[in-house]
Image (cartoon, rainbow, N blue to C red; front, side, top):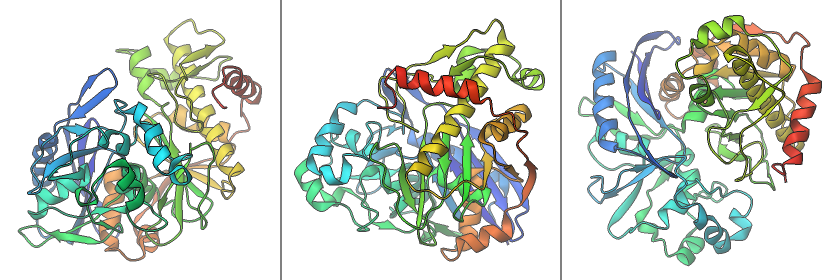
Length: 444
């Protein structure tokens, strides 16, 4: 007995096989490549299938109880009616159609004026020929490969394609104004719904986006619990019983599979800037030697910020000075921690429950100093889940079979360690950092 979670990331496909008690029985990964050209960012969807077949073979995809898949939020492609790809995959951060955002907002200002972002899927779809074609998210494409026929999508992956989560329907009137045929968009189901079965009879369940998958892996599924995913970028997810409305458009919410909402946002900052600023550096050694310094780097790899504020003009900057790799490393870490703190402050102004604890997931959790720094700057305990992988979150979702995800996670998710804040919040430097964001006009 066991369930497999698949995570279709930007740089790799990962699989985790887990049993009913949450023990990881096996795991596998295969690399992925993508192509960037200015504002364009694409992947070959056929490469997903090759990688998925390889990881499933490696983890031992026999005698399974279910599979669920997560992928990057907003990544999609077009297929023909038989499910064959007719375009490359347009990635979640592809900004080729940013100028189309205003056209979408004009079609339904009440719906999209404070929610639609330039890199979401819908602006890009406007420039594509949808005649006899289907919009397919990356997780849907892989699920169709596994079951042998086109499948429905889930409410989580459909969000950035324009799906109305409140009405639980595609916005037909707005799509009509935009010239978008409803027939090109898939049926939408709740996460955990069975989409079909593999030739071996294994159920494939509708998944969620990678940020939500990481939240499941962290067990942060009750109000007051939050998950912060730090990898190439920073993604925050929490739980609220009521839908949070953000007039700035920085915060958006997924549906909680058990009811209620999963508010949060995805920042353009994160660990990705370390590769650019410190190429070839031994990051593990830098982390062991790091300590607080009187400098901070706002760690953007490209122009534009999405969360905790929307600022297309935002650029990386440094407050103070750094004289070597160690200081640069420490300044980047402080910049990410400050953005994380600002994000939680913004969420609470919108009515989110006070933060009781934060579960940390993502590749950056390997950095012990960074983990402790984040606890210090946030001023709350941070929990390190035993298996902080989005793929594991999908194994948990598959195990739930679409019912009582929160209870299933409670049985399967374990916390490895808890780090308490030490009172070193760097308040003065944080205040200077926020003031600089305001001086540059990034926060409105």
